[in-house]
Image 1: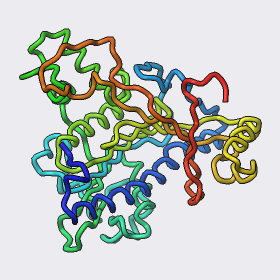
Image 2 (image 1 turned 90 degrees about the vertical axis):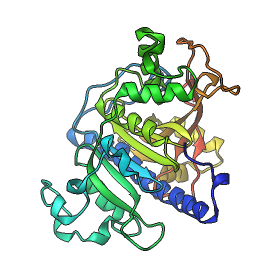
Image 3 (image 1 turned 120 degrees about the vertical axis):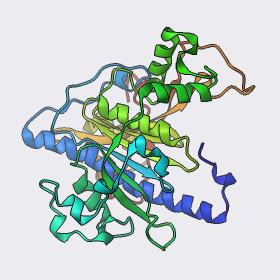
Image 4 (image 1 turned 45 degrees about the vertical axis):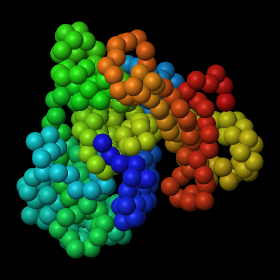
Length: 353
């Protein structure tokens, strides 16, 4: 289990600070790629964009849209340290998918190949995020972690592409259920019905219905595997089915998605925040013909049924009780609005603005 900041020594705290700053930068770019760029791809193709319904953001929601090639999908894993080679059987990263020129030359339509050099894969390189964006078109996952081959301390690198997640769902559910004290030894000790419920609850723990597709399954499996490690990790999953970007981190689960806003709604929000409407539009929303779109984030927290019991004893499983609940909602500023703060935007359970 990862360590809290208070449990770290001085240099580990410095690294945690660096990690969080870099994660913020990565998140800003990935949100734009997943949501904003996808939205304008729909508009350019003359296809209606399907905005999320409020019910889809509520725990245990099952509704899903069809996959679309117009929506940018990906999995990006960002680990604070170096992933142990012992995990290679489950997070499959090998010499043949290291980010080196002899490997990426086999990728079709990779525009940066001719300009590739080994420094491009480091987070402190100005072209790093462009490099990540170009590689997102490669299926499976990208892995960003500490680079063990360099002498410079705390240098993060995109070390591997085409990373596959291959940890059985049953093993992940067993691991979570043991930590939460619903089982003691193995997943099936309480029978097949309980085992099936615990596997479904694994998906609920990560904000998904158990019927979701492979990309979100792979992302939550990776998040569950990495939470066993000593350092924090973040898994970003962009899903066409859900029209959202999921973020799994030490802070829990959050979903980024687009909201449709009319001029009247924007004026009301601007008035509430004491911001001139023109400034609000320039800082928070994107034009879309006769309306605007904004980036919203729904943050979730865990209920007592999805936290380890204080007494550490085995407990009974109550399937009907939610493991996740909505905590906060934000409307995020544009990536270019560096002085604008996220604002509270309670939308999921609201009946009006």
